[in-house]
Length: 215
Ligand SMILES: [Zn+2]
Ligand SMILES: [Zn+2]
Ligand SMILES: [Zn+2]
Image 1 (tube, rainbow, N blue to C red):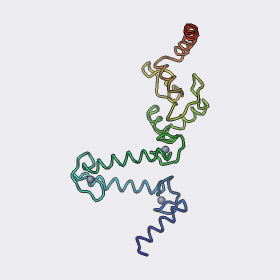
Image 2 (cartoon, rainbow, N blue to C red; image 1 turned 90 degrees about the vertical axis):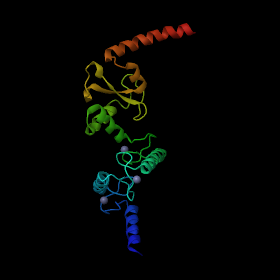
Image 3 (cartoon, helix red, strand yellow; image 1 turned 60 degrees about the vertical axis):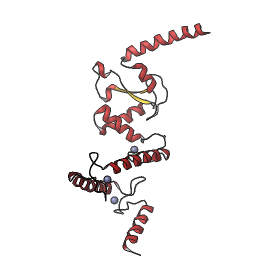
Image 4 (cartoon, rainbow, N blue to C red; image 1 turned 180 degrees about the horizontal axis):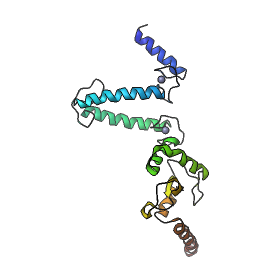
C-alpha cells in the first residue's frame, strides 16, 4: 500500500467511526469530514492562501493562475463556482440538509431551525448570539401566531413582527417582537396592537354583512 493509500484508508476508517478524518480525535461535523476545530484551522490557512494569490492579481482557485475577472476569481472559475453553488443548494434541499451548517433538518427549507433563527437574530436583534431568545419566544407562543393562533413554521409561515412598528419608533429588542403568521403580519402592516385588534373587530362584523349580501 502506498503512503497516499494508507492516508486514505486511515481517513475513511476515522469517518466510519464518526470521527474527524483530519485529527481522528473529535467527532466530524454532520455531513462533513472534519471536526469544528479542524474546519476552522483549514479555513484560516486557505483564506491566507487565497489572499496571497488575489494580491498578486490571479484567480485564487488551486492550480489556476488566470487573471482576475471578479474580485477573487477568473472568468471560468467564477462561472464554475456559480454552477456548483446552485447544484449544491438543489442537492442539499432535496436531501434536507441545511446549506449553512450541513446539519440534517427535515422541514424542507434551505436552513435548519437554528440557522434560520441566527439569521433573524442578526437582522432583528443586531447580533447572531441572541437566537436563543427568538426560540424561547417561539416556544412560549407554542409555535402559534399571536393573533390568529394558527400554527407557524420557521422558514415557511413564521415571521417576526415589531409590536410597535419601526416606522413609529419601535425598537429592535426582544420585548418589541412577536411571532406572527406571515399573512397576518402583512395585514397588520404598521398598525399598533390596539389599532390592529380594533380593525380585526371591524372586519369581522363587516364580514358577516358581506356574507349575508352574497347569499
Ligand atoms: Zn479534527
Ligand atoms: Zn480560475
Ligand atoms: Zn443550519
